Image (cartoon, rainbow, N blue to C red):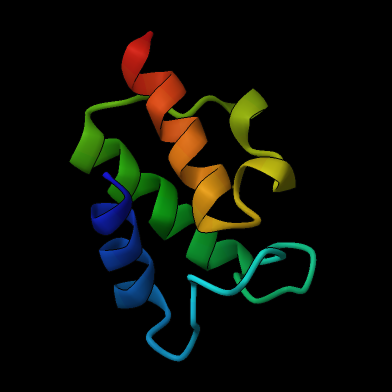
Length: 76
């Protein structure tokens, strides 16, 4: 799962070292269009629904946070 998330992120922004970044939203590394694309890719890849209430910075600031969100949604 983590590898797939990293692949998606690296396709969106190949210039970012996602393993090291922990403030992707807070530091404005990911822009709003990146988030829209990321949500779409995650939805397709993992067959999940990311709801508006899930679209908070805490869920997208790092690979760990994204992975945690995806795992929670897969288990629902």
